[in-house]
Length: 447
Image (cartoon, rainbow, N blue to C red):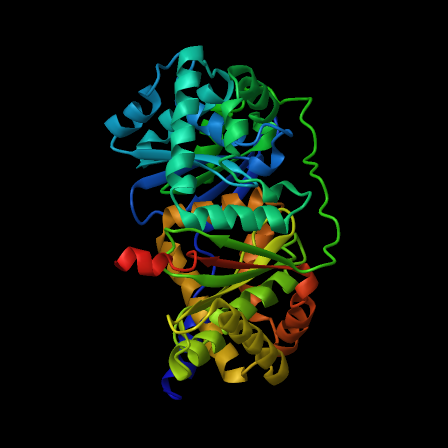
């Protein structure tokens, strides 16, 4: 292994980390365009990302961003309800959309020669959305049922929702993307149209095109279809309530008869990737992997799962790409003979051990090799690549930041990781959660 690893490192170092030829430009109306050239297959991914998500919703209107995403498929002045997706399918493609805290996106994957048609339809619903009142009411019911299925029917989802609300006292990241039920019920056609007119404009959008295309071709098509749409002169800068300093550790305990496997989870407020200053986020990214990433070697997995056998599962995670402060988390699922209090003690012990012992240089070298390999393999996922750029750009980063990220990760030192760990692990900035069934519930189920 000592002979193979250096050779692998040399081979990976010789491969370029840029997953495609990247070109960028801006239309006169303010729409940003990113072109990722990859001619290995005659297909293209066409994505329109809006710099608006659930965290940008007006107070009392939670869920409106996701609601509007659904309504964008209900037709325009020129297309009937459902016609958009039917046309995509008839042309051999697929389409969908997604809403997150920091963005909303719409995409199609089609043959490269259908790109112009996709732009024509997407540009149409950027300005010509037509909302039949009856369809709006029906779709609101659909979203309420979606919330029922995804949240109310899942003990883990309810638990996660409560923890997020506890983590963020003022910032809207504490509000669920799908919205609170009572506020969803109050959403109206006028709410959707107001949100649409304010945020769905070319100067608030990013077009990402990836696949068998050329920049000049994309520019010509974008100018033809999107270029004529006027910018919204009343578009306001993204302004969100600031989270006050967290001065006391918080706890959430949730019991539910449906819980089959109890676990303890803790999240800390943590800095996100910032444009031109991604170093701390890179250190936190590697810290999460060293503590509880994939494979048997991360500290928590190696000790708790393998050596001691006190945990069925142990992991760490970090959401680096975010417009505002994000979270770093750890989770321990104890074996049936262990309590959640003991699992929490195990978690604290692993944190203390890592801070005391520091970073294993060989483990860090292996991890960096793995990260570099994953960056290279990501070139084969055209849609994932387009999503990487879109998510970054709608979260305050630049194309240069996306391209620099692998090198920033590679430059992280042991000292950088330890400095990030010492700044992170302050319980006053944490939320610890216990999820379990009520006492005696397990016995009732087995009887």
